[in-house]
Image 1: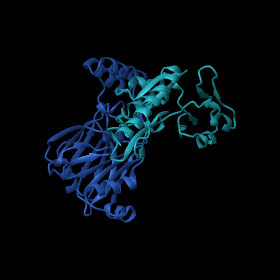
Image 2 (image 1 turned 60 degrees about the vertical axis):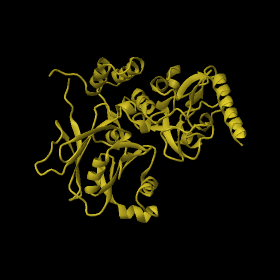
Image 3 (image 1 turned 45 degrees about the horizontal axis):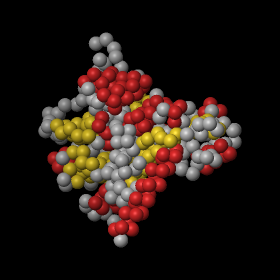
Image 4 (image 1 turned 90 degrees about the horizontal axis):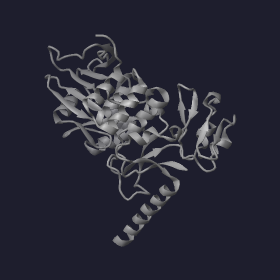
Length: 171
Length: 216
């Protein structure tokens, strides 16, 4: 199973992922309604030893997109039952034509990845572009990657260990 | 190739009026001078930062080119160009959102935002008041115009001109949509750009996808 991963130390906030995502999904460039959002967050980077270059002092950039959770709360929250998780690919998808914008999924989403698409009149999330995410292709810095979940976990674990060990050594 | 139609926001700071008009050409230097024009590239806002080009035309006719997210946010806010004229009595902040503009008095920001000092504190006060995920704030400081994220998007001369007009900052809330002639061709053009680089053929294809093609 493959997942979308984000390395905040590489992101410079260029906005290409948001612009191209909205263009592919809505037919117009509207980053505010893109399925992936680059948000500013205050505080130091938790899982990355390096702060990204684009943020102001004390600010980091983080990508907000559907994590395709193992047990998605949006699936149980949806009153119409239009959200489902594919047992094989693990992708959480929805039938947007039946959405009546109750916002239950948006309220329950733990990462805030649900976006209201005003053209479709429905709440939407990242569908990984059918297994070939456009945002990854246009990410010049390589901050976004589409990789195997095991490889992603291993890399995150080693980066975190490196950060902790680095701190201990400096003490 | 089709000629671009400019969506210009004319802001007369003396009168406090703002008007969005479409134009076939950008306003040139006026006889009396005193007009500052900020124009954006046809590809600004459609791709990454490299395409977010803008040109500042000074009141004396000289031009400065730069790259920054303000260009993209300006287009998402509904304007391809900003035509500033006149002078405010009190320093203010030009706010662009929802296809319109207005100026907020700096004194109001001081009252609502807490302590106000020049330099860094000015940026901090503006961030507290205006910053969202879709907003870009460009502050006219002594050394140049600095936008959100610390990027310098114009030199000290432009900054001095803005301050001379009574503007300490420009805030663009980019929540709108930017329509293009051929979305699929634009996506393919960007994929080519990220694989082949910015060759003339690729850039021409990108512009054509934005503007569309028709007989001259």
